[in-house]
Length: 105
Image (cartoon, rainbow, N blue to C red; front, side):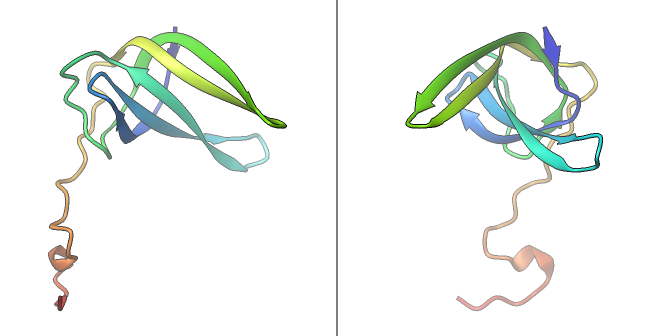
């Protein structure tokens, strides 16, 4: 079992999962994004931008394409850790008008 600490939903993975990213800080202060596919099952109710801790069974799939190696990291049979879900702010209207600026179309 592995657990994310503060993962953000980046996109939906069909109806049963989400792709999340988490910022990892190295000892020298550099940071990078780590990606996971979290499989929660039908009706998970998450949306892009939601943040939470996720707990699930670890698995990986290694794929080689040319001279590059890719590793897909999955959390299977996962769940949102109780009390950690922060829902994303409602989406803007898509035109920028929510900021108070006048936008001409």
